[in-house]
Image (cartoon, rainbow, N blue to C red; front, side, top):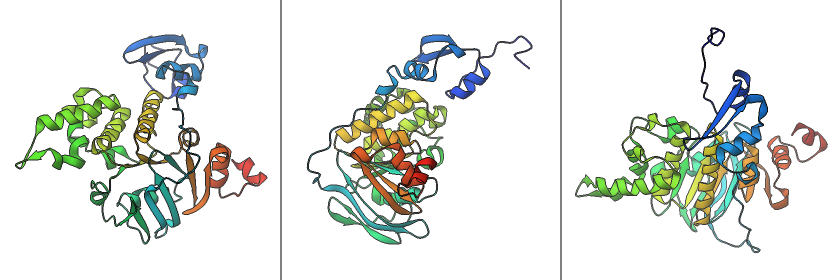
Length: 325
């Protein structure tokens, strides 16, 4: 009705379906610069994505490093026969430094309990954990983030589980290791700000996050602030629970690069994603969970969208499972 009255409407969205439904033309901005204006029906979704991220769609995912010929590297984290009552049964895994391990599963299959138990948020009813070959018992997230353990988590809901939205980016980022900035009972503000500024530069978030509440940032920048928190903590294990859900394609590409840089520096990553192509293009191997149990372990040539979906649907690979996928 507003449009029919003769008014001009500016509609901002990163949901292409909405843009095509409501708009006759579109303009793509990247880093504050107009990189192109088009009639909506005169440009494809793939071309728009390439303009948004500044590279071809094929180059969105960072190249996987080659796997070592002998896979004998000792795991940073070992989990054996993990169980959570009513949700998880007999799950075992090893997370190796420099490797990006994936987890797949339909909603509610136990993947959330797996990640949260590895961070001390959900109690295990059975099973054991080792860090660097030493047994550990995680009673809380406080145990997980200790320097001698070094496990961090980007949880499912950043606004309710990962951030204090009324606090500044600086306060959120430094909180897990705030003790390292305390001297004589007082926080050394200059030292804290310098450290936080360094990781803000790494995740490409404006320095105003030092003094601006997190609620004033976009969802993508909030997620990068969550990642910055664990980059500052220098955790050796990073648990990522659907970290690109609800962010624009440009921020997704930046997050992919941050994850790869973390593993290249020797970190171990466990990634769950509802976006199956992410798992295929990012991960060295994928554990598929079905009804709380291991359904498949896929790597190398076996790692494909079809194989992940077959296992996620509880199918061993029959023709009916292929059709369902």
